[in-house]
Image (cartoon, rainbow, N blue to C red; front, side, top):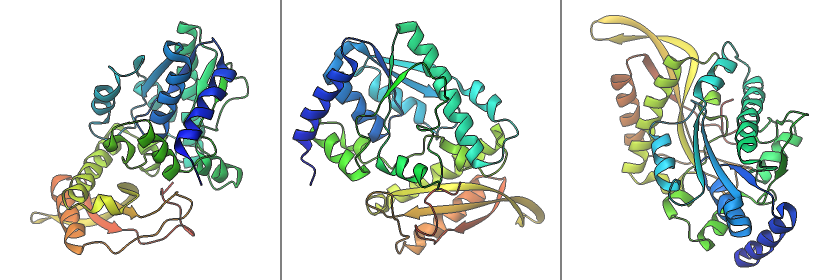
Length: 308
C-alpha cells in the first residue's frame, strides 16, 4: 500500500540525485499528474525547474485561462501559445495513432526550444503506469512516450509507477487544491482524439461547445463525483435532422461517461436519464452543426475510455 509521505520523501531525494544542479523543464498541463510532478520537482531543485504550459490548440473551453490563473503565481511558469504549429502539423491527418505521434514530436520540439533558452537539460513528464502499460501492450501510444530518437533532453518521470488514485493521494499530501486533484483526466493529445477524422478549427469549436455543455450539466447535478471522465466526442459521421421546418444534415456527437479507479478498467454506471436528455437537448439546440446525440455504453475492456 502506498505511503504518501514516504513516497514524497524518497521521490524528492531521487530527483535531487538525478537532476543535481542542472535546470529542468516540465510539461505542465494543469492535470493532477503534471501538477504533482511540478511540486515534487520544485521541492527538489527549486528555481531550477521551469514549468512550461503549452497551448497546443486542442484544449477545452476556458482551459488556458484556468491553468494560467492557478499556476502563474505558484511556479516558475511560462505560457507558450504553439497552437498554430500543432494544427499545421496535424492538417489532413485522420489516423489517431498518427495524431499522437505528431503531437508528441511537436511537443518535444517546443520544449527543446524552451529548454535551450534556459539551458535546461532535463524534461520532467507526468507519465503514470497506465500510460506506459497501454503503450507497451500496443493498445495505443501515449504522447509522453512518443519521443523522437534524437531528443536532446533527458527524461525524468517521478510518478511513472503510480496509478491515478495514488497520484491523487500524493497531491493531497502536498496540499494541492482539491479542485485540481479531482479534476477529470484529460488526454495529452487533447481534443485531437475526441474529434474523429480530420481536424479543423470548426470541428474543434463544435467539440468544445458540446464538451462544455456535458461538463456543466454533469457538475450541476453532482454526478461528476461518481464519474472518472465525462466528455463529448465529435464523430466524422453526419446524419439527417430537422431544424425548424427544414431538413438538416449535421454531425453525430457521442457522450462518453465512465467510472473507474485507475483507468485500467472502466464501466458505464447507471446515469440519470433527465441529465442525459438535458445534455442532448442543449447540444442539438445550442450547437447548430449537430443533429444527433448518442450515448456510449461500452465498458473497458473491450473498449477504451477515449474513442481514438
